[in-house]
Image (cartoon, rainbow, N blue to C red; front, side):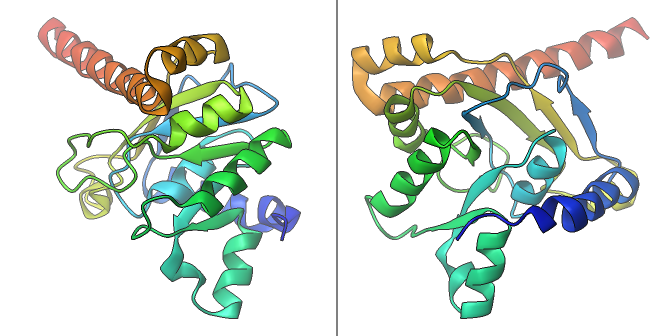
Length: 215
């Protein structure tokens, strides 16, 4: 089942409004967002992540979602209309989810992947799983790294103690990823992608500390 265009017409504007008005979401470095087939890869800190990374991007995205959200016919239909496809976390291979992601990217879509495979409960990034590296190698698509902040503390955001933030980094080219794959396969590529997300996080933290010292 294909993603519904009604999502972009009706639901997407609602989510964007909630993100910007309620959670004061700030999006950085979105101007040079690439067209064509694309993988978006970033940290995973909350169940809130998928809808808000979708709201932050200037184009429609697809994403993996835990299989429990597809248990009933209605939920399965609704999630697929949103552009989601199931991933079975207890499975060690998840070939169905990987193949679906590859299929979508090869069709020219943008697919969101969380290299860690599951969300972090303390904000620290978990080891990279090989999935995103496998998808990148199979499709030859570039990767757009991103960093999410604040989604793990929505209550604090509502109390104006923090805010939702999405920061996009520099594109990782297919050539860079292929070099990594030649050296160590899909896992090495995934580790390289997650390392770029960590670099993005570190650069943001250094920038904020510098600004504080300058005040």
